[in-house]
Length: 68
Image 1 (cartoon, rainbow, N blue to C red):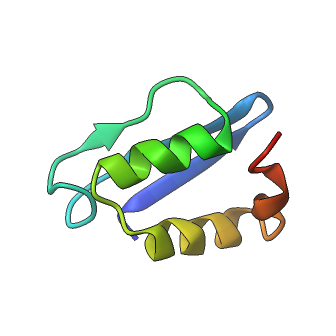
Image 2: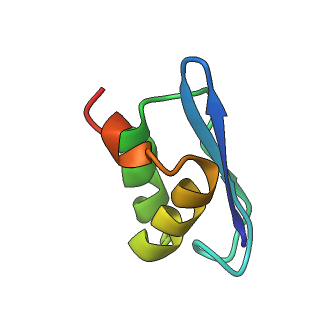
């Protein structure tokens, strides 16, 4: 996949490379809450299904972290 999400002790970060997103390399910056990261990924043109697939692979319990 062209979406790479990393889990940190204080949040999540991501890197997007083509063909995902808007066909340009993008990095989220410092770790942040998961909900904010998902919003930023969608703003970059990533499909919510692709984001969810990466998150399930990283952490099957990721949905529980959306509101923390």
